[in-house]
Image 1 (cartoon, rainbow, N blue to C red):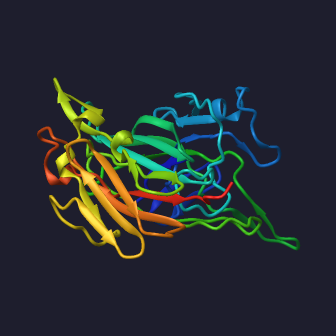
Image 2: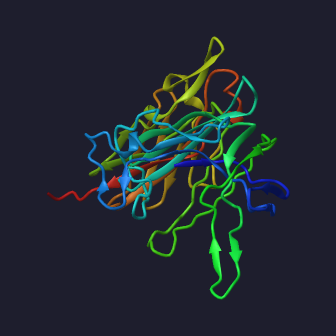
Image 3: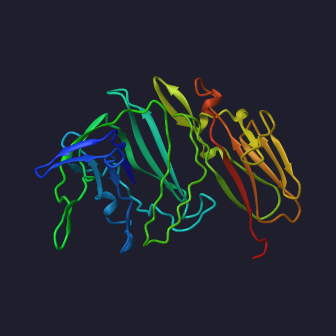
Length: 329
């Protein structure tokens, strides 16, 4: 997991002991600011979770004053995991499930923002980078200097073995811009799929998917037990499921269609009937006769406390999945 700096703007002029280089815009910058290993070794596979492996040794952060890298191993990663799940997944209860949760929080001292990156692997969440302050300027080693071509009977190309350090100004963006790029290289068989992107304001309610296995007959589930909303305690927001407004629960028949406020029942022909109780936060599902496979319903919810009662703090969608298991055996 790596956070990189911005691209260099304009042409960069760097003078070395050999010559003056002019590096075009887009070919310099992008320095690695902080990077963290999660515990996967390509040769030996997953580390022994009882050892203090690469996940707690191979972490480095750029010292923006000296341009040198220093070891960064906080917070500890006690359960190693591969950043790539290794196969397609559909539910968060699968071991291959991966989700990146990136929190941007205003930095009250010095401006800019602080970044915390959490990776969900399966049902577990691990903080990989915590409260990293995105700098406004830095010193780093520029490795984008063009190679030197030496003509002759046997022309050669010489690369810089000790590139010089240079400065980079990082303007804090006024608006949030998100882009994705994926490269697996020619020697790998990985496939990169980015889906279900969610952008929510800081301290918005958080709803997690809920997957249940069920044999037959009606079932009562409590989907809100792993959800939270925020409440101001002094001047610090605190998260708890007790902050949820149970009456703000909205049912979505799919990711595009919402039943609206106060509509707590939905029946799907051939599948069954969903009924939500706004007093207890429980959802009851009455399956149709001989239904099999899985039944899915979506929902969102928000806080009962101001200012987080505002609609902009409503959670992203989460889903309730009832998996029907074989009645035999």
